Image (cartoon, rainbow over all chains, first blue to last red; front, side):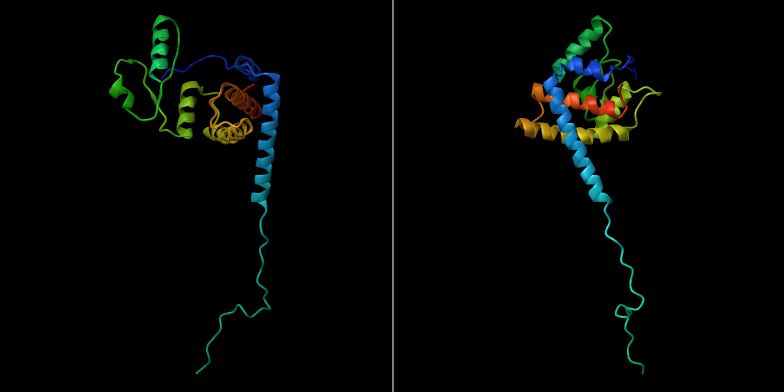
Length: 70
Length: 118
């Protein structure tokens, strides 16, 4: 399997080769910022946990009821 | 894309020119085209991880190959970016020159931000 051995282009070289205009860059920056904000909001939502309620030791309503003694 | 493959193969015969063949299914290419000596196809299986593995096989080097997980994360981000650009431009797909250029630019910016390129 041959490898294509060539020095990788820089980001700026790639952008120039693509013909990305200043207007394109502004659109790209805006859209990527929106994606970042959505990812951050999603991460915040998934990290929020409902607090765990420990059973009250004084509360006997949850204890299994025992039948009458014969 | 048989036309483009023919052009790439002819260029490879005339001068120093490298090309890679990506195919979804194993042995399908050999069933229809048997004269590609020395150009085994890279089989991707039709899904993004398969495509990304083929890209790493073709272009990755032992010292500088990013992990597959990094590329998958980038792919997910770009999928969201592509949908936003399509919505903004009111198109039903990414295959318009201006939209494709912006998406490629977004991919470049994201790759640079993650240290995958300089």
